[in-house]
Image (cartoon, rainbow, N blue to C red; front, side):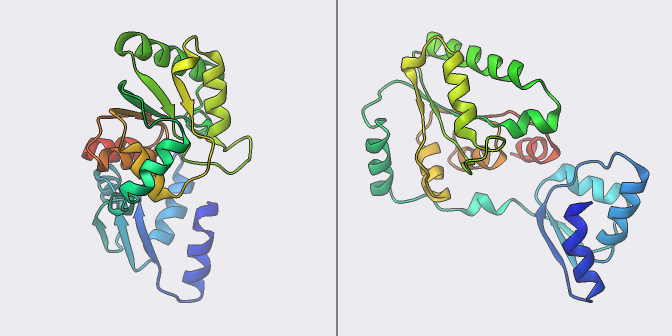
Length: 227
């Protein structure tokens, strides 16, 4: 319900509200559904970033104007190639000739999917070891969220996965902070990308990089299904 607080305030003040490129998971109770429908029917415009959510708004009878569009992150321009080369040099990735497999892991994925986090880390570590063995690959963990909070810093999760691996010499964990354009360019250098962060998989898909989404919510399932 907290997500509807600013909408409720704006509606009370008779301000127009535009819900921008959103996804909607199925509401788990009738009370929450009725609450959401009350406010969604009072906004001026809703744009939806994938077909699953678009169909759901039809199903629950939303009367406000809503339209299918795409996540704006698809339009984000990567940084210049010159800047990308600087980053690759800084992260010691410039001379790697092996297949480069990008990884995005997070604690959020297990929190919202109610999956055992330790089990998840072990599975990812085993998968990375397997990819290195089978394809002589180099794994690079590209952290999409770096806010120095232990519950939401992808670098900490990546470090834990690396510590569980046997082939740690073939792993790079990106620790430096980069802009979204720089991260998108870096992800574009990967030969394969496996991501738990939705916008990391949008970055890879935008580049035409083969992508596996570690999906835990409607947004990831819907966006990847549309792609």
